[in-house]
Image (cartoon, rainbow, N blue to C red; front, side, top):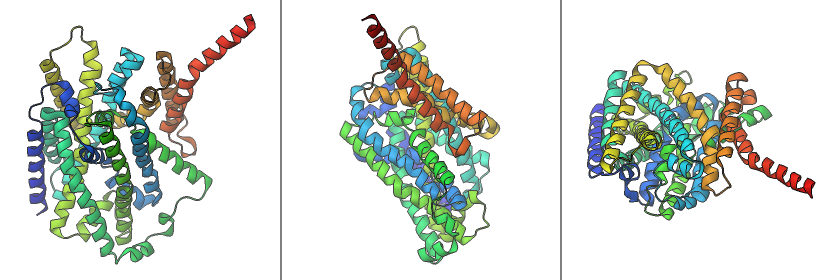
Length: 464
């Protein structure tokens, strides 16, 4: 029954993706879908794209191991969504033609910064895509008994096909379907899980008390605060997110859709985390990695199991297609395009983006299947987006005074601090190197020209 439900679901996703992607003629349409989407579509695509396997199965695993503090840490992501809706989105009206991070960076810092952000964007997107590819194979094997490699090939071939052909239009329409499935499936899993252990009170009594409380010691609170900030900063204004801010009919649609996504993520993270506590109450000896699958398999009727398995596949596919599309756009628009001596025709530019999207997807599959250590390196590079690109990008969008000098000094300070803190010192006091790097970038970025201005004022005063 599960296999049949998932097979039908995958077929529907493929048909919707291919159908929605018809008529794409330019790179701009491929990247932003002609700016045709309203509030609810933006809400659905943001929610589906950025929840990911780590915020669902990974959250259940962490709450199983450490308790509800992981849910609170994930609410840093929710806060980020709300802050972006309030402060960033209204400023995006100044970039009506931007389709990528590189377009914004180029306008303020020049071509070098555009290429720099393009390279980091491709690496970041490739790392996240590779992780989703690996997770897809694991889910197919775990729930459906399909060998990991065949699960990877099946799920990813569908994602690569509709993402390559239809770009953002196909991605958004499939995200809407995937969001609908996960918004139904995850609450069902929690409901049946709680019922299977005798209700909420029985579950609370069955789990250790420390899993239900936040750390009270100073070091524990410091570590939680650091993790919270890491989720605030980690995916802020990453390439696929910036693309979502450019696909709306109006700023109001984008702002409201982003705000709804942030609000929705608060109870959603609580639900996925509580599934981990349900698994702990059902069987404290189960492998934490299997917390959510264990609840689904042991607490739900067979037909509903198929729906929830489809929901988990939806979570992974919706993240994979977003990062695949963003990697293709970052590579073609922010790296290749500025290096070309002569501009290409709209058709040639579109074909280049489609070919690059296909190749990035194919390489992600190869790496995920054969060379997992490469993915570890790519995922490690994910930690350097905030210390290098986030501060100058956010500063430019928010209207602060910016310069190429500030960009270079900030990026060097950010990546140096992140490397020193993480690699050399081993993240002292549980503070993430991503947070330290972002703070170092911000301090350096906003100190450079102030120091020069102070010297100039002192020189003028001395002469007078």
